[in-house]
Length: 148
Image (cartoon, rainbow, N blue to C red; front, side, top):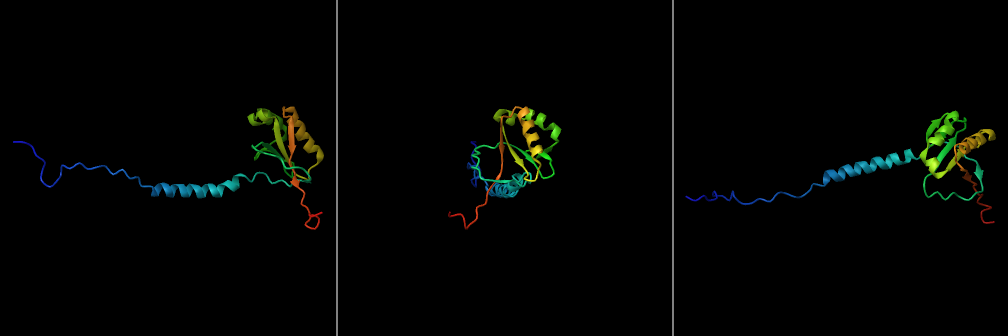
């Protein structure tokens, strides 16, 4: 007796379902998008410094440079991390970005003593940083004198 397929069509080839369910993927991506939108402004805040006003051309910053900040109380920050003043020179020597660029930006509060700012600049120079950019706020022009 020959073997034959059972009645009822049980021997038909069934193709595997190859559709991908994208709804969970879209849900996860939307949640990640919302999380990044909320956290991105928090990451960029940095140290609160009241910068002096100056009539100067804006810096053409195509790439991020290392920022050294001095707040109103005289605390020194390398990026967003507080650094003891005595360790600043060693930290700048050990920082690969600062050593590669040989350039930093200095945010110094307007109410600080001039001597403290000069000491930070001297520490940067001893660490081998040749260019120290002073960051200021642009001068706000009066609306009445803007056309003159």
